[in-house]
Length: 401
Image 1: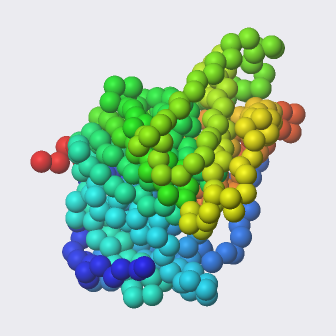
Image 2: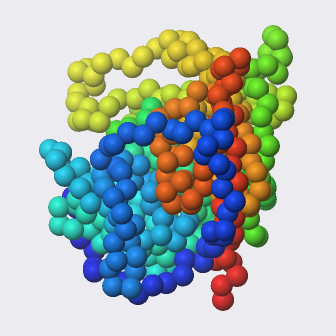
């Protein structure tokens, strides 16, 4: 179901977030620079459009809509997106994308959204990220809570007040990173960039898997007082593991009753920590797919045995370790975003093979923040070194009266 909110207010307003545009850019003609391959997809930028007193960046297509909305908010850039699945059987915005827009309205002030009747055209003017306590949001059942956590964490860092929000829905699925991965791997990653430990927490109140969900978590994010901290993080993860991995810890979080959610299932999250505090993680969830919730229990197929799931996920973890990066492939996009949001200083990181999401993130960073990454593959190790000068994003929201 698509909704057409009230008409957008086109009066320009401050978002409370500042970017220094006088950034010294890396020279793309550097011999080490390898530009991400460009694909003329439906998501290419096709210019800017003046509407009233607001200049809208004009975009096309549905690809990376969540990240575009995130960067639009952080960079104070109003956007107009057209042809959102215009040729699809079910055109327009999907339910989880509408839910994400509602989440942006929940944590922001003076945020304006306009969606046309078919859902194929979206106008978004970001507001001031307020943060605040005792907030709640129902994430729905089409995507898990993990879909909302990554952008929510970044926005919370640049809010006027610390953020505390309760999220309801699916905590573990096979499409998005689980809440366990965010708690064990994502939060430690933030601390690398100067995010304070105090007030940074993800508490799992109850679990819920597809198709009926029932999970609930509480996310707490502190505000940064000025800006993030640039990093040099180039350890090669696979070279610094103990040979026999003697310290293996197993943690079981078994929920029952109301805390177990509304559908049967189970999940597994594996995390490897290096001696230099790199965290490499993988996870998976086994549950019945959407559409099977009304079937008789005798008609449902048996879930994959835990033993097979364990072998499969362990192989995936070994594959991530073999990549040699300081983070796993799932976190490439977040790592690049954090580097780009740093002060005007050089950040340098090592990753494994660039994944499609990481490449698309680099493109969006260039479009919204004006930050270029120098990319240098290292054939000897099979890794890729990336460095950039941050855009100088500062948290001005907390200084507003």
